Image (tube, rainbow, N blue to C red):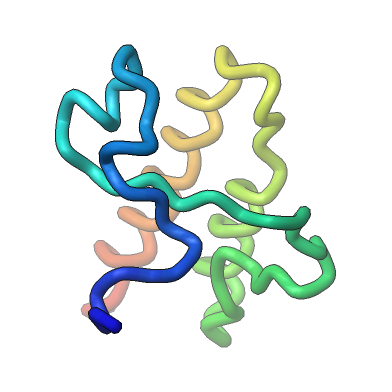
Length: 90
């Protein structure tokens, strides 16, 4: 068995012809069952720096359904992290 090919990956011949993945020659990973949300790791781990951690917590608060809020939140995160970096030498 080829170690680079997962048994859960479908071959290109099994992809629908109109699929973007099939036209790009990419493999498609198909899960046999739903992923248990309790087993998914958080996007980030605490850094120990309260200013950095509070900025990163804003990302977890992003409403995935409200795409219009993403820019404002990510701008806040960027600004906070930039301020932390600027103040590292002080």
